[in-house]
Image 1 (cartoon, rainbow, N blue to C red):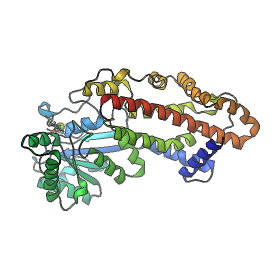
Image 2: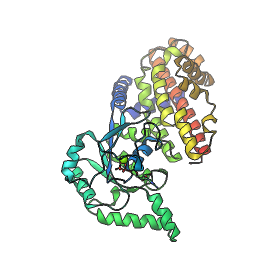
Image 3: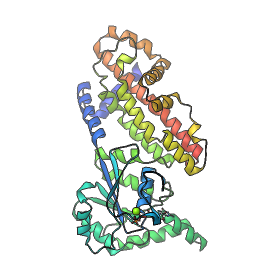
Image 4: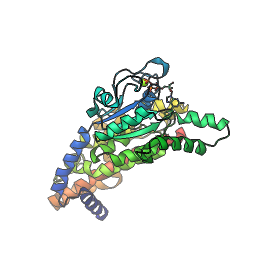
Length: 384
Ligand SMILES: Nc1nc2c(ncn2[C@@H]2O[C@H](COP(=O)(O)OP(=O)(O)OP(=O)(O)O)[C@@H](O)[C@H]2O)c(=O)[nH]1
Ligand SMILES: [Mg+2]
């Protein structure tokens, strides 16, 4: 009981409000924002820079797969094409037409591609930065949006230079210096070296960290939640993001003020809890489609079968009834069912506190279990 009260106090202070009612009202706003936020990412650059491949990598979709952006000699992108995230319908990644061969200016280009649609721009190049890329960056800056230079295909350079005796570090620093020289007006913090084949290597993580700093609060989480699980680092980042919003979900679930009656389900808002855990499940890449894709990528056929978590099974089956039973077992394992039964006698304030801390407990235990399973997958896949 003591530790539960401490947790309730911590959640209340996290909300920045002094009363349950205030925290609940604030949480409802945050949940609304989280659900309604849309993120539009523009990927631009010269023809062949690797835009479509990068779009596919961000969405965790394999080149050539159904719904993937066409890449390579297959087809060139002629108009802005929106690709929805496979599991987060509010995150859109735009594959913009290749630039620079046409005769229009950077200013005309941003008008043509509907500048206002996007939250920020990624300007890709697989070689050096051209005058046109710099002009485009200046135009974007003038219109008060953020841009980032992405040097793609660095895996190719590293391999080629290795054959000439250069280390990876030497090659990366040569590439970086050349780009920095060309873009000195903007400072080095805007340049990121990546490979769409190996997101876990080079500067991709740095890019995500910078995006998280640059984006407004309500859009920040959408970035890391939408990324495929390509390393343990990104999985940990996702986990921490979810952990931070648990208080919001608990307050918004309506547990505050409810007087729990004997029996667990009356005190818990299952649809809200299920919604949260389902988000975590997709974001952690635990759905069958993501697991199959990862299995293919790392060439390990057993990944889809390695977790036996009952929680994952009931989330996959979308059965609210089975989920309710599963989550109730968390409470039973903590001896909480018995405690709930005495609550009505204790009066509504203690009831509210208990009910709230019970919701927190279920959310935390559920999140921990999904995180454990995802960690196991990452380890088995050998991408930790
Ligand atoms: N080694 C390596 N090759 C890449 C990478 N990204 C893209 N490529 C290859 O580069 C070629 C061009 O990639 P695309 O993604 O089609 O380039 P694009 O910028 O969309 O081209 P357009 O649509 O014609 O403007 C393809 O053959 C890709 O397979 C990468 O990170 N590493
Ligand atoms: Mg393309």
